[in-house]
Amino acid sequence: MTERRSLPVLQDGDPGREPDCEAAATPPPGMSRRTFLRTAAAGAGLAALTACNVEEMLRKHLHQLSPEELQALLRRVERKNSERFGRAVTVSAEGPRPGVEFGYGLDLSRCVGCRRCVYACVKENNQSRRNPQIHWIKVLEMDKAHGVDLVHADAYYEAETVPRPGHFYMPVQCQQCRNPPCVKVCPTKATWKEEDGIVVIDSDWCIGCRCCMSACPYGARHFNWAEPQLPASELNPQTHLLGNRPRPKGVVEKCTFCIQRTRRGLYPACVEACPVGARKFGNLLDPESEIRKVMETKRVFVFKEELATQPHFYYFYAT
Amino acid sequence: MTRLMSPRVLAALLVAIPGVARAATGAPPPAAPGARDELVEAEPPPFSPGIFPCSQCHEGTPNTERRELAFHDEIQARFRHDSEHRWCLDCHDAQNRDQLHLANGSPVKFTESYRLCGQCHGDKYRDWRVGVHGKRIGHWDGKKTYFLCVNCHDPHAPRFAALKPEPRPLRPEEMRR
Image 1: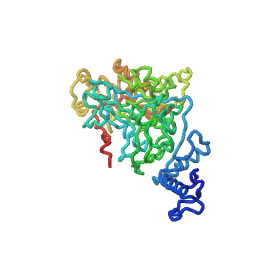
Image 2: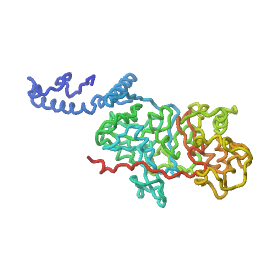
Image 3: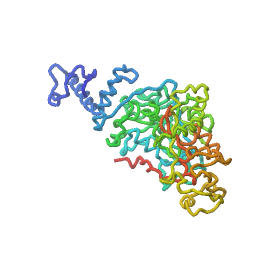
Image 4: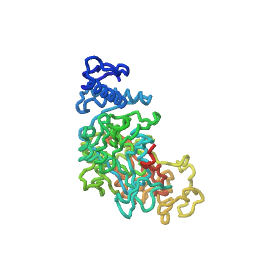
């Protein structure tokens, strides 16, 4: 840590000095035992917090940062991640474009359940590989006899080849709701909806309470129960502050429509990975976009429509 | 992967894309972000190595009678595309072996084979032209790579082969340490 910020609780102690074990043993003259203990306990707590980046936890909300402060933050995050992985990492905070509202289409009549999208997403978005294993996309295998019915859905199917007879596949990821329950319940405003429809998380402000996970009806949010395991060789160094930058232990993460790609005009990684062309992406406000053509010509539905979450994610049947 | 096509093929594809065709005919271009004029690029047809041009082997007067061939064993073995009713010269041109032909006999280059496919699969052709069927990669608001029908579907056996799925996710109990 280069700059130190003092907390009010340390004001009566010595904010500029590192806590010193020997000095901490006896109260300085003129200080009551109670004040001393309170200060020492707070100091110990702070020392523990430094491991999980107290500097970023204490900074202002992203919306309150001045452009200069934001730039300083980006450089700081770049430097820390470059040090952590021993590779050059770029962190962008590219904002939404005017006149763009993202829409995503998934063709249930095409998806074969091969899970290529799942692993393309893991690679692109720097998810923890194992212990904890985090997948932002969950592919559900369902029975054709039952239709879209979560009672008959299995995310853990194993098969020599897919599609298996009698089954269809429904990948589920963050639905980027217009009315997101996860945003409503966040006690720290660490997650919000951007102008272009992407629901983002600022992992510096996330306190890991997991209220958003229980609020999400799609199971789309995932928690880093342990230190994420991401080998430096597999790191995607092109990151976005609100997207795929490497996360610490104890924060929630989820699909962001590949914010680091789509804000630059690229398709999301899952769209490019799909071998059957089941995934469609584009600007809902552009009448010539693929997603608009889907919505105008195909049978479209949104998942759990009855909850009025109003997703930006549409399932459709092209045939 | 993103090899540019010849200008002529490019022009043909440009006409096939409604938004661009409109721009070319002088109508106002759609008021959408991104430069639509640079969005067309397509994969070349996936020939087996060394097989094209076909005229390097096929020469002289063709035998246009439907029959079992004494050559192209590999294609005949996997041919499953309404094979009961159709054979090579329904799509391949007997006069010019390096091109295809439509049902009405007009020639079609291999790089425009989607026109041939669209004769029967009109609904897919319509969807493909606006990006609903098939796959595109690159930029959602600009330059992107299209795939011809034959880049994904084997024209001699168009149904997709079954795939081996990637490993299933770990169950929560398998992640405990």
